[in-house]
Amino acid sequence: MHADTLVDLLLELNIVNAGDVDKEINILAARLVDPRAKKWFRRVPRFFLINIDRLLKEPYVAKAELRPPGASKYYADPRGGWVKGREPEGQPTSPLRVREANEGYDPKDQTYTTALHEPVVQRDIEQNFQPFKPAKAKAKGLFGGQPTKKELQPWMTAPEAKEKEFHHFDPIQTRRRELFTRMVGLVHYLNYQTGMLRNRASEDPAAKANATEAENLLRKLETMKTDDIAGFRDVLKSASDFSTNVKEKPWMFIDDGKVIATSGNLTLRQAVLPITVMMLSKRATGRPNPVIPTWCTKGESYANQYSNQGPLYFVDKGERPYVLAHFHSGQVRDLQDATISAAIATEIAPLFNDPHRFPHGLLEQGDDNLAAAVDQLHQRRPRR
Image (cartoon, rainbow, N blue to C red; front, side, top):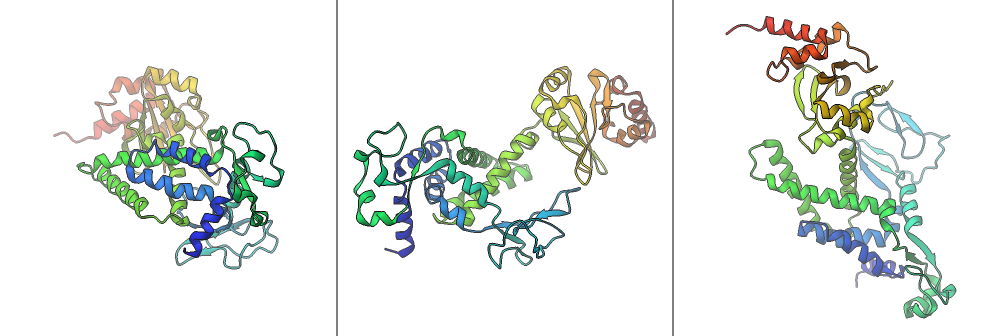
């Protein structure tokens, strides 16, 4: 037997109730639609759940990502503290020690080798696994608890077992713990990717590209080695980004909240559903001086109230919130929830230049300045 394989098996045996781990994995895998995803989930996530110490000990190699407009110039140095610029520099006064001499930024591959993941994994271990000493096994046990004296297996009491560290997996209320919340998110992400496959014959280039990307992912899962830690982390990262976007940017996955007009660096979104209204209203304008609009539609009650009356229109400037319009309640507001100025009305007027979607009466109901600015655009339009 290969030496690495033997080590993996020994690590697995150190969890005294690996069957409970398999039970949880199988419950989650049963929710996956694609057979390739099912097999991968029963193999790779199961391996890293049982061998979770691998995720703790192995440094995390993360791909550097471009910062969005207005983002901070500072970032968390993998060695601790905050650094300004693109590449980390030595910080003798750093609050965290340097784990390894080669830990940091690789400008060639544009990757960070970091230990910032350790607190999260350590918390996962503490929440899901408890040390178990066979010699101190109790005569009576609890449902889902550690093995009793009568339940001890020979490999737990053999002479060589005294040198091993055993752990017990807590099988009670797993869905309340962060680790399994991420596992459920992983299932949702993989099923979403499977759903993208239906667009393989789509005439929409974007939909077809998404289908191709989904198929490539599922093929990657099919051939991924069981102990491919980088591959597993990449999929987890994608699933985490997906879960965040579903909560904070639902318009990415539904027709509501899509961009319906553009003009220079201005865009216009139409929102009908309360959840879309809420999340679009909560966005900040970005750094260095982030501003969260004071629109009342950040709350569920007002989002329901206004969306029931008619659609809301969000104007973004440079991909940041700028103006909110709700014509049915007679409101076109700036970030401070005040009536927009004539200058802003003139600036955003091209977004409302479609007379079929925005007839004069509707615009006038919302704001006189905006209605007048759009009328001026119509008057300048050359006659056919």
